[in-house]
Length: 105
Image (cartoon, rainbow, N blue to C red):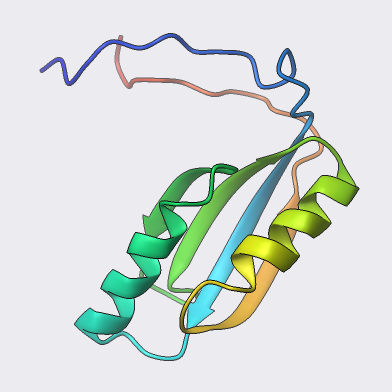
């Protein structure tokens, strides 16, 4: 049941005050397309979470940034450069309400 132990470090304490939810659409869902995107997104240090999705978008990412200027850098240097990306939709979190590391504990 236990998959590991970790310290939950405050993003704000590290000066990452902005959380961005990013929806990504790819040019297709071929195995090679998905694997190339996934390998590249793992290299972006600001991406905290990446989910392969059903529905309108192919992936949803949670991205930590210091401020809007930092997100512009991440968007320009990382997200826009990811392979096979055709659409990026960004939403900015106004306030965190809950962030549970586990369910039912």
